[in-house]
Image (cartoon, rainbow, N blue to C red; front, side, top):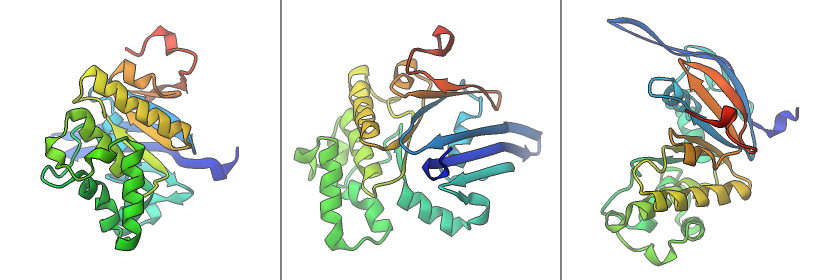
Length: 240
């Protein structure tokens, strides 16, 4: 194994939530590796732990036990400020709800991560224009995001995820609010980004969406019940 190719390495990862009602295990001893350039779908029923896993992988939460290394760095060794910096610089995010500023233009929405990272204004335009072009919305750059269709909004979100040239793109139910045609268009864009060398981690409950990936990690009751290729077809003929 070439460790330089490893982007994500989790080992015996566990997450336990504790409140007045007691302890609730969300993840239990989960281990896997994701290499640079992989396209991975994470699936599982509601309450399976897939959202908790996504939150930990994207630095929105920390594990209770086990280890998580991102590009060789243990997240347990990083402060919240350092995690936020890595998250903004090396990760891109696409959400089901788009999370756009409705009254801001497409250009301004895509530019936001560069503003947060204090990228000089002189460098922003080229990066923003390239990201918008990558999703085919050059003619919408100055239009308010709130006036776009759902599919166009998600393409803006993908452009925003791309603009910092991240190592990993996390897509959380990216087609959940879209009709089938728009959803397929969005997934074709993600597929193209993968072919261009991007690492993509997709969380979805939709079989058709999951099939765009090459590898499936299926979570059930906080544990991995399947981790393998889906390039040749679905495991056991079904993802249900």
